[in-house]
Image 1 (tube, one colour):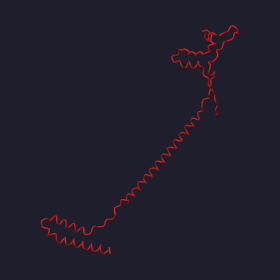
Image 2: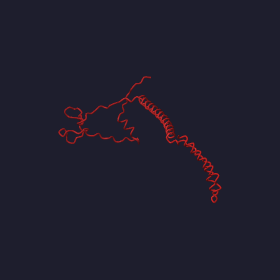
Image 3: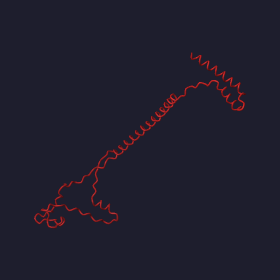
Length: 182
């Protein structure tokens, strides 16, 4: 079916009837009296009373108000329905595109956050890594001596053999370290 445009004219009487709620006819609004220049005014006669002029037997027409000219009524065709739908569809498509972009950005942000977190962990591990600790030589013999002294506080000579073993171990380690330095 082809689209055709049409116009509808609504009279003021129809508007008045539609606006009347109780079925009674409302009072018609008065039309504003046009302002006439002071020389053209006649002594207190309204335009409705000046219907006939005795000279010409013609209806007297009151000139329009000074300033704005009277314009004929402007009748516009109703707006086509499709452009509103097309505009709505365009807005919806832009909205969908925006939502897709937001989802992509959120995924990208999550990936970047994971990558940054991994790199931070790697850097932290490298930077704050404790150096390899060398085992303390003769640690077992040292702890055995301490234990013996704690148990035999009054008779420390009982720990003599443990102390001698510990001293021998320390001498051996000192010899090894001094021979490696040379």
